Image (cartoon, rainbow, N blue to C red; front, top):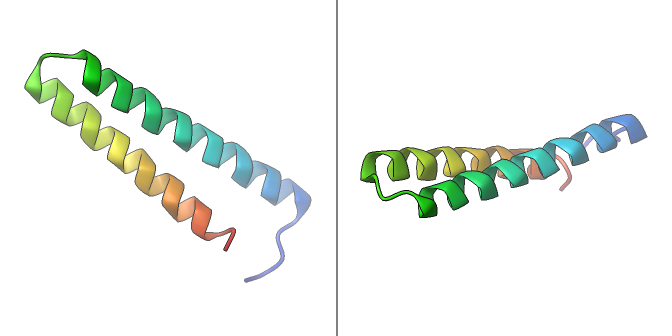
Length: 61
């Protein structure tokens, strides 16, 4: 892996925090609704953001 600059690491850290927050928010929203269609959409969006988080995290490995 190429060395990342401090600025790049900071940006990556910010993106990870954003994706983690979105994962949690959409998961929370899914738990709060009784509408199954909306629940499934929120769960899918949460999973997509978890996927984004995982992909970004791989840059740190």
